[in-house]
Amino acid sequence: MVVGGGVTGLTTAFAVLADASRPTRVTVLESAGRTGGLIRTSPFAGLPGVDEGADAFLTRVPWAMQLATDLGLGAALTSPTGVGAYVWHEGLHEIPGDILMGVPARTRAFATSRLFSTRGKMRAALEPLLPRIPHDDSVGALVRRRFGREVHERLVDPLVGSIYAADTDSFSLEAVPQINALTSRRSLLLAAAEARKAPAQGGPVFAVPMRGMGSLVETLADRVASLGGEIRTGTAVTEITRRHDGYLVTTVDSAVDCDAVVVASPARRSAAFVRPLSEEVSEQLGTWDHASVVMVTLAVPAAQWRSKWTGSGYLVPKPDQRWVTAVSFGSNKWAHWSPADGSRILRVSLGRDGMDVMHHDDDTLVNLTLADLKHHLGVDFSPTEIRLTRWQESFPQYRPHHFTRLARLEATLEQAAPGVVLAGASFRGIGIPACVQQARTAASSVLARLDAHN
Image (cartoon, rainbow, N blue to C red; front, side, top):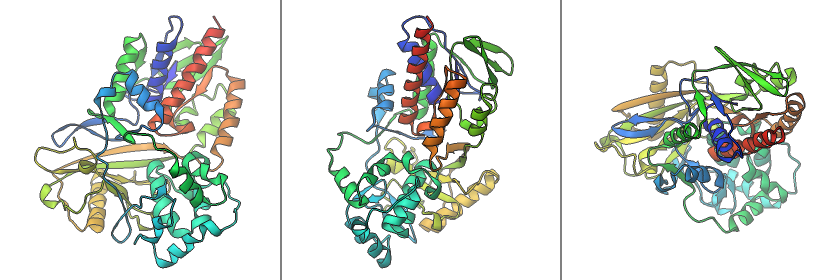
């Protein structure tokens, strides 16, 4: 049994069915009326598909790319155009090239940039000279102590924060492995420089099916069904109880016996239905924090677009944020996002950890978006089409020492309910590759349990 029909749950079901050594029954239960979770693609501005959530996956780790290949989508992938990006601070500034997740790998990354003040550059230049400074499990605390406030606020926090909708002062350093790995050396700058010397993997960094990320989960769901799996949408789980050597999964209208359960739903939403298995696990899951975001997609008339905006978009540092946190120049980033009338697609993000926007109605959110765009770019846009997508509690927040707490939680769950496994964005990574990897691991655990009981 798999609880949750997002990319983690569907991949788990696919992996179990594809790798099982004997006929195996797999059911996916999804409370929403569709599968895909936070992945959704829909027509927009005359285009057949523009993503409403994630618009690509990382290729330099193998998991998502391997899944796309297994699903026969390898030949249908496309990649971004390769244009650079900006940070907005009293104007647009190109993001320096000599960085690793925002951490400078050369002094020129900040020395030649107008993004930083003279004082900020002098403070950052001290980093290689500083002794090893003790730090706790916080991205913000580490970067500020090493490079000072400006590098943290205007470079690292916008980049990491845009990925996780996070405030890096309260976000686990261990959850950002590219930065965490740098702490093995005294100087982060020297460690970043060494890391960038490593041979780069060839090919593009990101990829997406031409029909959008939605086609990945649609193909995945179709493959699960073709292998004999059952997917039930609109079916919320109310409780999971232990029963003999297996489990009884109760929904709003039925109850199903099974040998193992993969919980691939968000942590806080899962807390209630795992309570019969372990009150301690339930209470811990109930404390997980999640940030909500709103994605506003706009079609901007060609006459209002400026040729100087050549990048893929820009990030807004927290001290400069009013409502908008990031803007993607979609038609610059993706060659196939070019409407026939010449208009330009923009995707604008609002909300993050510590800045909730979900209480605003749609009209207010659109007005706030347009006001911020005018403030940033100096143009009073009059979009020809607008789409607003609310992603409620969509970004789990990995607080400092997240993985220590998770290890204790999983040990408790293993003792109370062997055969019940946690997987998904709430636990070991929010990116699509991380979710696919967790799904593969969960599937292997389930198959090992089934083999041991047969």
